[in-house]
Image 1 (tube, rainbow, N blue to C red):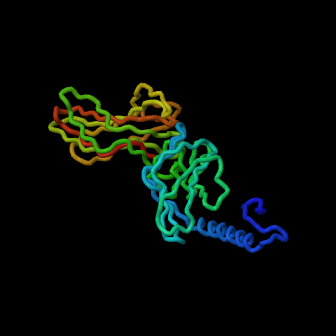
Image 2 (tube, helix red, strand yellow):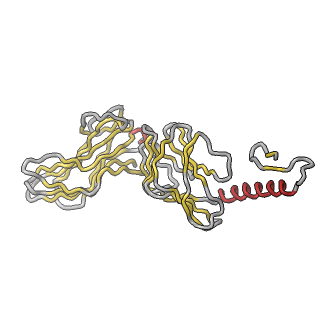
Image 3 (cartoon, helix red, strand yellow):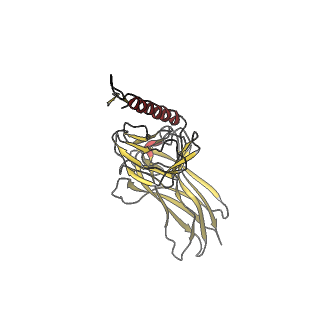
Length: 292
């Protein structure tokens, strides 16, 4: 049976006998492709948990189900959490179930092109070091975003931050030492014409006069190998109680320095330190780098 050159629709040949079955196959193919085009106009992607992208390893990951909502059918198609390798020019696509009668799981694949079929749906494409999602979200290397919301996380004109520190309680020993309280990766090239700052939220408790600090160290390029830790910025307070929000504006240059981060993707470490009495505490509620 002959097929069309692009959509592969079957159609009856001239003077074919029997003719009706071939014509029915043609009409069914038209209906399936037409419905696919109609459904694709209404599909919405949500979820994904924490979505991460690292161009150096070519790994794109999501920590929770990506859900494809089909308002026509009223059911959800779910893509399980995964981490996939995608190189420059490749695409990530899902194999859909058209007009599903129940919510169910579907698979994803990476390839050089999207298959020529009515069930393949492009999810994302890599161009250079960026990932472009079908819903308009753009990810630069090192990005970690909460779900597939429509945002350009690489747009330096918008406020965003990289949190390096979870909750941490520092207790001063008889001989004060720096304690590592968080780590993270940050790409200084994304700052652009905006302003970068090192920020922290902390609550010191002093039995006598003293000071409490959190310190930001550069630990080398994100691609490795790790370099000797270099102090970049320090946030300090001699006032007890809180929480207190403290920040330090940073410049961006070719290499890390005093109150300066490098204009490339680098690894960072945050440490806590007190200079007070043994047993005094510093509760750190958060800290990292922000762009505004």
